[in-house]
Length: 403
Image (cartoon, rainbow, N blue to C red):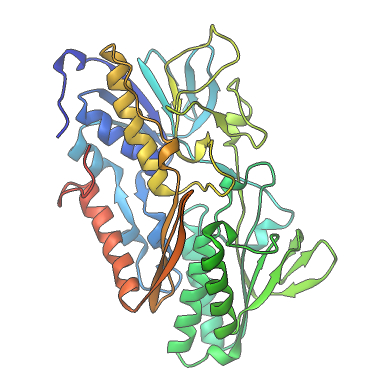
């Protein structure tokens, strides 16, 4: 249990971003008895890892959401539903779409997530990792093809050579496998051509060599056409055109663009890496070249530029760990303590990759990498995790993790 120090009850923290890292920071700062204001551009928390089942109709949209107002009542933070439009770090000032300017907080945490690289013709694609509403558009587009009884569906993700940690390919694999499984259940799989594309020659390699071998074997087993090692030139309404002008015909294209620095961050006076992510130290404090800049700004989750091994990846569990660390570090610094927690020693890849009729547990750190198939039971383990994530955040069941 956290020992709340009443002397710091009046300290205030502004958290900008209502995703995994921002919400976790708000929840844990309240445990340290801070006056917390959470700013989110939507009024619900979206559980992205389980949104893969919206297009295949295993889950309804509302099942993947938690009302932020309900979370506000449970945890006691202040809530502002508005979008961030400008950051003036020197003045420690944050402007919202409504025109409201937020300032004079004891601490500020930036957790707005990232923007996405804008490929030419990207409007002809739909993403499972973009605006939550796109999951519904994917569902409707898939429904049309299922009703038709045949079609060509392609799944892919892009890269960012300036920061490979911002690449998110797992959900693309998961939606592909779940779509295959759905079509098989309906008895129409043979009428569909499913393809996967990525600019890397070995997509998924960061998961480790064993995982890569198993993934390639799975692709061949379920007859997935592969288009690897070619950069995307342009998306058209019914095709993907690669840099060598070869084409992939597609009635429905699901594409996850790699992340880049949040558009508001990119135009701000924050120090950024080449990809536009906020530079931080190992304690998630924003670093500045100018010593006169504020010392009370933090960045976590997809907003931040991660330090670590080349295979590092931005994932929800790391974002939440960074949030818990920041809450702890802020409380320590306000008490005059110097024992702070770093995120760097916790960098790993951890996911339960769903396949519609099972799953695989994937793990990698500096010392080991493995992929453990979990036929049948894995699918329900991930569904259970989705229920746990929702109920635990609402404090209807205990959190497995505690400080």
